[in-house]
Length: 526
Image: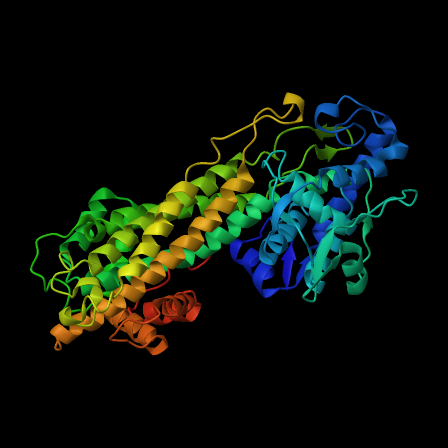
């Protein structure tokens, strides 16, 4: 069971709760901090001092005073008025990740909310109530207001004197139903909000952070797969080994570049196909792969640290530090998440781009060093058979889409709330685009591995005494066990999907890396 305290949540734990339904509990120390913080809010209310979001309106209405008797209705009204998202619902894993991150944020104990708010979120996670949250409509500042408000519709109940009972939609045990029905079916009591609690629930780039955290988790795996696909292509094309010499990469000092070159050397160790072409140097898609994919690794390291900090950050406003210190600031602004998501999208887009160039080279009869054009079974079969002509089209299409999706979103801003919020982060859009780029890149890498496996089959037919490297031999064998070689044209799409499903498994990666006597590059996602 995962214990959250606001300080130590990891990206891997976010993925485990979001996808594997790892159970969650609140740390005792966090409960005590939250009780103290909530008591301070009550003290502030009794003083009559104007404090944003506790006894004032929101945004442009920050100068409007609200009486203590209206505090609960103020929190509820915030949920109701802000739940205006649109678009397809976010995947369940994203909503669950956001629920966990929000609970962890509030568990730090400087938001002024009662433990019951976090404990109810935790019960929803543990019992499987997932609010339906639209994917569009967030500016990422003041955080993900609309998505969090949709979450709040299910989580919270109206004050006793209110006539409304809007509760949104949720999924429970595979069925879509009204949120209040889902909570009732799961045996969870909805929370009647107190002072500050509506703002604490909705304020912060939590959904952006959730999408980014899952994208970081997934991209770690696919960066490892990218090196396996690269190594397979290098062998199929009889590539030159000198470009991967350790001395070259240490001379430039970038750790990602050094790691990629080392990994290729380990995967292709004992290969007799490497250097069999007798070339002094290869095209950039082979020769500079460590520089390109290594830069992506270094980018990933930066982005993962931003994501790790954000999922353990207090991101609402104001923050309560004592009975007399409720400080208004801007921790809700999603700029750190937006920039990191943009950076990850750019990096993974480049991984896909260089992989597509290798796919092209593998299928072009003028560039693949003696293999049949389009990797038809034999030169004589070309024409009647199109070979792997069209998978390269698909890869090219995805790369072009990535180039659009990785255009920075964080540089785009429009003012909101009557110019009170005059610079916005666009974080949620950036995170959603990064997630899409990672998904597209995974498919491009599956096409590369599938294409390289076929090229290796044909190459070994030409050179029956040749031997693959330790890691690449295992990768090729596992792909062929899942998807046998077919000499003539076939429906390639399902076979590529099967290859992608295989590459996505931790077991495939572990088997290949073990055979190569190397370790995963991301042994712990902090």
